Length: 260
Image (cartoon, rainbow, N blue to C red):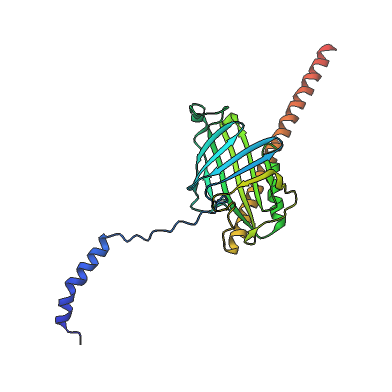
């Protein structure tokens, strides 16, 4: 039976515990997500498209090395902490373009890397083809673009005006498995150099079905925003041309009146 004596005896202990809890922060550390990478550790990838070649080397961390046109650049990629248009892989947005022009290690005007290495999860093969077509169209053919029958896609280009090498290495996953035997695949364009364990490409990470849906929603939203942007630019160009033609007609009419 709990008596007044018991209450007074336990009260100081309870009070002290309450004080400790009030001043001591309790940290529930958020476990970082597993990065969805493409290349196994210590592997190399060589890609050849239309006479252009890029070699990509993965070390035993998140470091990547890119060799192109006689140049080598090292990228300090880091894992994404949340999905960005479906990507939860490695990313390196590079340094500011202005400062990149003064980097001593620049090669042929290129000194910084803007790269992604990730897995994209889809639940519809038609949408994969739409995504691939959009990647080509958005770049206006300026990207070297290729994919193989194992679901690996690589996009890259050098942009001297921004001192930038842009590279995307993507594992296309369809319902939890690599999207194999895609139309337009060119297996001879991509060569793997495995590590000592014989490993090359990683497996698609298991994800919830909502990931594919959310990825689709974000990508389609981006497409709509870019379509609106291009449509607004087209209308501005049309208004500019119409105003210019109207002004030229007025000037021509005035010249004719003066000639009379």
